Length: 373
Image (cartoon, rainbow, N blue to C red):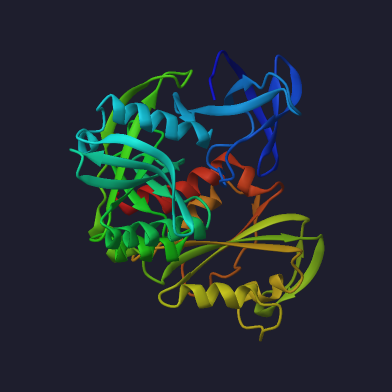
């Protein structure tokens, strides 16, 4: 897609995976979003968007990117391959400077890889490109949602070696200030395990880029470090977790706490599991179970529950609770805090916390930057 002229807008809300509502010159419009990712950290109400007019079709605008921390972040995933191709042709990616592109969208088994590269007319390399939009201050991760397709690509890149073609996956991170790249083991544990398993069979690279606001020319390209020792240590079935619980206005008996009045809205519960984190979360999500913890009583009446794991070797439960205490609209004293000095582990938000920038910042910190702090 050629961007002839970019238009600035403001993000209002996400309607579905590929449709958002934006404000341009004081008027609300629907815009096409060519990115099915979760994008919670980027699509926050009021954030500046970079749009392009579609020149026809169902919607007037298409989302090209957004501005975060003063930098343009590319959201249009179809443009990433065009940018990477130009970087390869201009020899701006050091570890690919000896290759040239000989084919794109190349079928192999069940996949279609983005590029087939060639080096000195002998060595060939399948290159799959992944757009990474999940990042904090120092750390970037991929994917931002469970990606069976991404895991399959890694496996099939490793199978290409049996046919005399090397395999490589390039993660393109849309921020120039980062230092590290890791697979998102909090979000997609299986992808992370596959990433580690195949690290010696395929090439795994990550670069950070900075663009001009029209995304026509990358200004900075830098390779990111992939700290495998951190992945091996942290990508385990243990850690902390958030439960985002939506409940109606109701008075409930909560174990030894007695009857408590709950306001309609969203509650965030913080828990932990030193082992078997996945099993602990599955138990919480089951409808039928013996009432054992305070949270079990609340979950019985929940309209909606969403779990967010934070896999870590550190004991973060109380630190997370303290951070949430400073931004929550209210809290339930004594809830889930019987074996620690915290006042509570349950926090009330009048609106969805996953649309609250302060909550997203806390989540991003513990999911990403706490790893290397």
